[in-house]
Length: 458
Ligand code: C2E
Ligand code: MG
Ligand code: MG
Image (cartoon, rainbow, N blue to C red):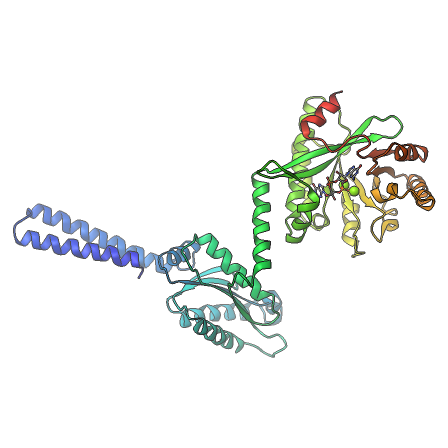
């Protein structure tokens, strides 16, 4: 029984005793005595019901929260069975269900006071008053030993990962869940069964990563990102033929932070796909607005990270968005980069095939990876965007490579664009060798939305 329930029971008991004494000494009327007694019995009934219900709903997160918050001495434990999916293939669903229910029973047997919450099938969080580290370690070994009895051989051994968090003050429950999860995640770093206690100095890397994830999510939710547009120009006519959408993070101080600072972090923590989706959506909204206002904008290109290319839902997401905002084939172009470290490019090629037949694709930073020439065979690609390093190389051989690259790309019917063009001499050279388009500070820096609209209106 929880401290709160005990307190309520005590108050009811004192109230009833007082009522009885007052009635005995005729200090209250008979009517008052009966009404008070009825109310006290009703309160007792509600309390009993609450206690019973809280037992039958043991598996809810709300119950875990309630029990965790109502004691100052609870410890949070998170654990699961290692390689559960693989083990299900080896042992079968039925056997693994048995193992899970045995695991549950073992936890409740060893920690009789535990409030157990099932996060996923084989993944539990519970709070307990067993606080001694040695006791918890022994309990973990004992639970481990019990479920190991199910093994048919020790090749496919059944093991556990476990994280433990000792709250040193009563912070909010979500923070406590976060901390026990970090300890649990740390235990996963070891291949074999392991138990890990939350120790901030040992979990620095994970805590930092977790902080970055939260920050990125908040930036997306709070719309702290801003999209800039860098115009792209026709080399011959110097007319704007479109732009590239480039993301910026606007800090609370108003400082504008470059994507080269936060995109690599988001690539590491896996949130870059959400940033990409956010940018695509904002660009679609922008295009929709330009169309409504009859402003000609050409094609706006958007950068896609490599992680987005493996996102199974991406094409579905794009189709829905394009339909909603009336986006047509030539309104948007997706810029994808080749794998810098020569990683398998199959998924890039797959994406190009599926998407490129319906929409426009550009290969960004062309020439910086190991498989550039491979991309020239991908007929569904529309544009080759030649990396800045080519125009920066002013040597005779550098100029020859650039000239031939553009010639080859044009022969294969790709549109060509050079990025990072800063000087008049570069522009003159690119014009001479018939590069179709140019993007660079020579013409314009990336602009804020309203500045870009003003430029388009001119
Ligand atoms: P990128 O796609 O190759 O974009 C071109 C970068 O070159 C931009 O840097 C642009 O500001 C810069 N640039 C353009 N002209 C010149 C020039 O004349 N001189 C020099 N020195 N730089 C020039 P930015 O905006 O800092 O973006 C850096 C990279 O961050 C981008 O390279 C792209 O890979 C990534 N990025 C930007 N926005 C997004 C986004 O929305 N999603 C993803 N996944 N990546 C993005
Ligand atoms: Mg780009
Ligand atoms: Mg680029």
